[in-house]
Length: 104
Length: 468
Image: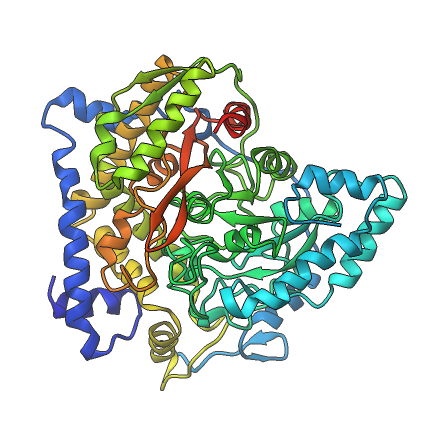
């Protein structure tokens, strides 16, 4: 990771980074990446280990089991009441709209 | 009346027997909160409606409708929502954000007449292990003002440890309830993933986050957990149920304990195991082969989820904003200036491990290893009923000691993140002190149970409190 990489990923995440901070951040993230890179050693090329890793125990562990969750088929809240709450949270509003800068 | 060594069950008995009023009880903690806040920096805001909350609770008690939590003063971590009140997650970007709904866990306490004194400090968006990442200043340790409170639930924990609240709600993504509880000598529970609704908790890493209780005793923590747990249609990951609570055997992953553990912290842990053995529990060595990888897996999956969850803070829908020359420039400026260093670091790291070309190497691989870690625990719990290890490898460290070295800070989570990765419940209970620069600093034992095995933690934890 170098300063240019940090700039690129910060751009993807829409974060403005000051030039003066790029090198330091690159060094810090590089150290973390070096540390977390050790997971490459966790799974051998042995097919059974990979299979175990992929399937996991998700069916054995209740709270991790994958299942569909449906809500009751009825109206859950009043849209009008929520509308006002949501609009009040926005930094800028105009009438019943959230105000943003011109897009096109 | 002396309220100093009060627990919830004692306080609640005093209230129901009419020996004290809610106003007297809350008054003690509120006065502490007001007088100690400048010293410890616990509360970001002490609420202005406490008088109304008190009168509502007193009415419930007078009408015979009080429960054990009615009139009990709580601190709430600043990332859990109460409608109409500011919830800032200790971030500049949400400095004036008023919650538009109430978190399920908080609502359940309000329904029982619990009092919320105020919102307590934390690492920004719960990202950190020392509360040094708060945009509003560090919270100081209850035992030594030069040391960190731990984190990310530093404020709620110090509130309880200094009698500025009788209990608190926190959140735990990688140890954020257990580690500060250990640093401040009180009890903290990270419940089973999904056992407490996350509705109204600001999302950090959604596959790891859980709300949990912080209090002075195992019994208190159990009372709160029982009040806040349960299925919630607003959080589809919630689960319900119980497993048999009989505990005979406790496993210890000894091979893992060598890492960076202070010798006297280890000694306190060994002494605790000796006492548990004397009390009749069988202590067994267990092997969790992939435990060595937990921290690496955590620091890939957590930032990945952080980078997705933090995308909502764009200065358009809520919170603060900084104007740019056009729409997109406004996003960059708002996020660049109003998010703290650690939050930005994790977003960038998460963006990296999720990006094309790296996702296979990091994110997907980490999920595979997470499955191996879950397997390890499932296998271990076929052999033992509980697992024990220290909560933290050290006692509270000095303010500033690790602040400029993110990797060192991350390594402090070494004994806590596995429980979040495996989704299992874990409780931190004080087990002694160690001497550092003239201060006696608390250390803790951590007990870990299989999914939905909280009862085992409460049973053995309460026993441990009587023999430690």
